[in-house]
Image 1 (cartoon, rainbow, N blue to C red):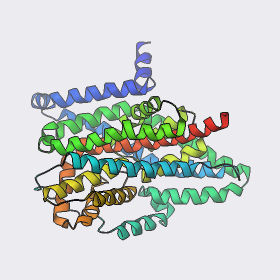
Image 2 (cartoon, helix red, strand yellow):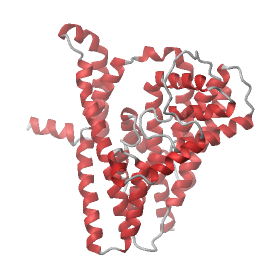
Image 3 (cartoon, rainbow, N blue to C red):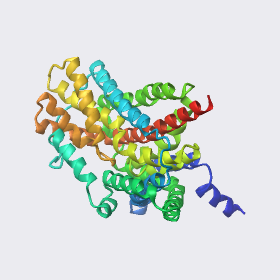
Image 4 (cartoon, rainbow, N blue to C red):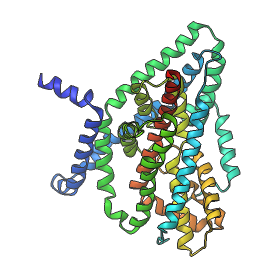
Length: 414
């Protein structure tokens, strides 16, 4: 009886509570890691860190094929002529990303950051122009569908799933049902993977904190404070305003639910792509329209990048202020637009936004060498910066999707 109750708690109990326990245990392992290592002769944190690696790898493995079948099934089974509210969701995505970048500009001007540019990083793979980013996006769209799934090219996966889904809208009911059954089967696999989230968080926290520690952030505490401060302002001020605009009632219960159940997991996985299954499961629990969320959430993981826009803006202006350059407000607003557009092309994996910093720095004539050093700064503070960025990005995907779905339900009840 006790064993069965323990098994239920570990794998079927309240997910948030289990993740919180995994977080605390991971922190304890990180704190005692050096002492235990000297006594036992091996790194305990590295050992349990394997659990986190397995969890993230499993999520990343299932995400591409989950998106492919869910989007295809949703579009294939969508009734011809039925109402589509994707336009409202995309508007929220883009507006939220731009406002986040604008907030980052204002915060950087109020609290200018001056950092020591001594870190070097190789950025040979960083895009050098907006045209290169756009070309990469186009090439990803026309990628081979199997290659897109194998390499987790989510833009390509989305393009093919949307195309096939639209084509299959006129297929027989039996064919549509087969596609829907595949989507349901993969969703069940995702449910099993998510049940292991507490173990994954336990491993991720233990390994990350024991390896880096908070001491590594000491020299960049001001820059980190500006970054996280703007992200929190976006999550708990800007986003609720946009949600209220849609649902016309207190937005904070919904905001908190999304942050707690989506943001916490994304904080530790540091991958918007890996958190897609978590968001889809949350959308299902919120009783949102499946035809909407099965398309909107994967799309949001690629274009809804408020956190990335904040990172690009703050680090670029930190380089500007460090070099003693004068920045007009108009130039800073232009940076907001560019950062928002660049963020839409950021990779949905850990550190994906950092490689776009040289593009934004080019607006102010900053050399690639200095931009490369700012990328290095980003990697130093990435322990908290990238985690918070991903938590904001991913939780906002399901938040804005839920807001539009609830607005539609409110209008239908009037």
